[in-house]
Image (cartoon, rainbow, N blue to C red; front, top):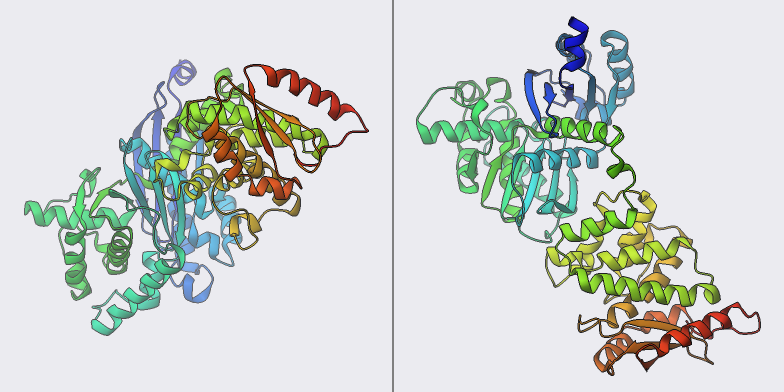
Length: 548
């Protein structure tokens, strides 16, 4: 009877987030729709990262508290008979010299395997959580997750990531380095503020856009919201449980920060809405919120208590669905995943599809004479389909935004290297050519840099051949010539604007293919016969294309 009940019930999952300041556990039941219902939550403030940033090691007492907390959480998850339990650790374990030893001891004592995740993975989980909790369609947002050791900032337009930053500005780290447990007088406050701004200058600089709103996760945000909500409503009841979606104004946070920094620790612990165990690090955390909001130019801050553990649950659900035999997921063509991402970015579908068509035809004509690698065609087509996604952020630097959006996209069926190549080719579809001083280009292997230059050269010309976005040129062929390659353009009427723009964008093409292209208009289907003739010429060992 019991086995039958267990077999028929919904899937249950548990996620544990081992942070610098606290350890949190959530147990949830997965609905058939892919959403979930929380069954139980547990939290322990173990201060695992206490003194870590001075000593470089996890101390014995915090580790002992953490072992006890994890043993209890594992027992809770077992009690709910979860189908899967995943435990992740963030900056404290990641940075500690004895972090691996801690993980081994947790496995020995608690029977838990800990996964130490990267800052980028933390940021992605915070984004997943925000996407579930809020409707971000058509909105530019900054997703900020403040932990004890680090801060992750994601700038996104809707559900599409433009930038991910990891900042060493955790609340515990800053408190230990600059104070805040006791009242911060003017001089110490200035030191803390300058330290935060210095990191923001180095890591963020001038943000690519100003988000409409910040979505904040982590104990700093929930406690600030608890304090502000208590002040607004004049209530002394605990409010931390009812803060999902609660909105604060940046001015309110700044005003509260200045009051907190001069308030003695014992009085802070008694403030309604503030967890007494967080009173010593709230000043540093609030300072980060205020300075990050100022840097991003955001006036509104919305609270998302779910944070990393909610994102972890959603990630587990997605992985289980992908592994469940859903043919639609497993058989998705990788170019279709590119098209789906382009649609998510509201890219000009007809124009980009046509540029991809012309780019593919140019590649086919150039491939033999110039020994272009077979894999290059798909990379080129993908870059063509995505070359305008940066318009989602703004027009002025849309080629640079395209690079970041593609780099952070989850494109099914592509390796990390291929995604990086696609992003680089799209990045160079206009303006500056690839240069060694560009970090994104310099990071590539030598062979990949050569491939990016050649594919970007083709993409620039193909983009110019649809300058009016009217798809006037229906096909393009490649013919050998002496000292120059002839590009035969099929169109019913003379595509003067397209020829002019393609010629204007052909500088890189001329360099990488050793010759200036000549654009020749051929009415209707004449290009088809010329392309067939060119193909035969390519097969002949006696003929070579001087430029292509």
